[in-house]
Length: 202
Image 1: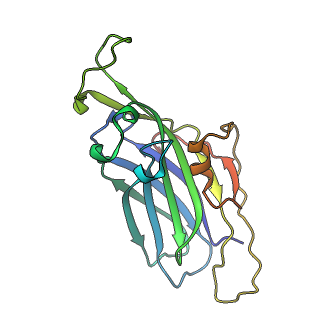
Image 2: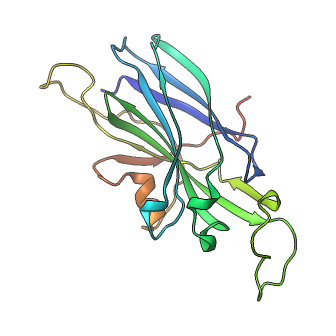
């Protein structure tokens, strides 16, 4: 079975300015001592049409991990605007939080993100160009993250049996868009569900 289970993930400071950092309060349970650190990563999808615009906003190693419930805040810088096609800055995209052990990803949490211009503009003409990024607001759909778990080998025994951790949830996101494929993982083979969380953990 999986030795690390994400119990809750809260999106802090949401909604926020596009230029503000992303902040995630992550609660996870470790069932047994781990010999290596966990690698957490935040990935922003810059374009649904071209993965070359994806940006790793931050990646950190967390460890040593004590057995039991652990909580920390993962903060990542805002995306680099110069790496996003102009036509993809506004509208809906995806931000991903992943966790890996020994370079093997075992959980991926995906959120839809809506970026909108806060000042009124002519719909037929579009917002002023270049965009004033201080007037772009980022809203993360924090209530219904898409959670995908992947079976990995946790120990040194290659014959050990790997099982996915089941987590209660309700609802989900339907469809098979490129954003959904990224949420579920490019390699497939994972088990996906929806985990209900609070926008800010109380």
